[in-house]
Image 1 (cartoon, rainbow, N blue to C red):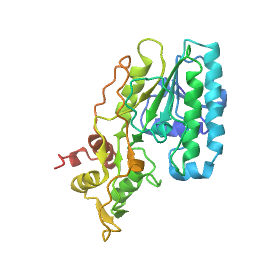
Image 2 (image 1 turned 45 degrees about the vertical axis):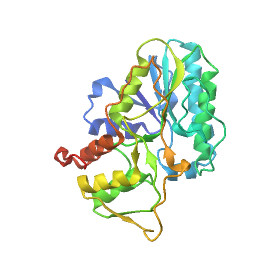
Image 3 (image 1 turned 135 degrees about the vertical axis):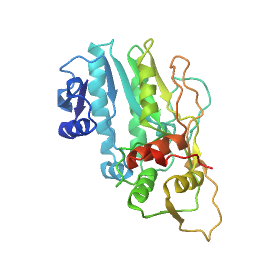
Length: 289
């Protein structure tokens, strides 16, 4: 397994810390991609935190396109290789939760007024480009929410801030506004990738889903029970704010029949499992009432 990164030393250190046998992987500078043959290519290049997205601003479009074009050039000369591109549910813009079973349909080019709109556009541009090469084996996996024990707890993502509060024993401060999210975890992401790799050649997009999405305050109550999360609503004087369309972020689109994937974890079970691994104490896991 060849791993490519702009920072290969970081990749090597991570793999070593996870006790992954060095005989099955090598960490390389991303500039060397293509010098050896690849049966499957997984493109996970991107910015994982809102603060990074803001700093990159419009440059994220060019960076995403640069590495995507490198892979597309490789596929042009190696059409039997399969390409898994990690996309985002943000490609839907105003159309989250499309219900029609047209798995190759391109998402809307209209976006909500989000600070990360350049990020959304970079994913749309990539997906449009991929559908323009229907004979190449390309699957875009649209990730809506993702949580891992390896998350950077210094980041600004909602669950990064929650995890930081649990680890440090500090208060998690939030607003009375609700939101609904669908969080997938590494186990199910990898199972989805395996399902996309297996079987006949395909050129399509797949919405990654957990077994069920979750509402913010239900999640916080469960994490309080499970991990003694201390959370505070900073505007309790205001009335409860029901989740607005902007804050409902999950897909109702079924996985294509040609992709044999069923998630193991719900959003709640996945978050609890990963947090438990993060705390290195599996005995913390209990049923949430």
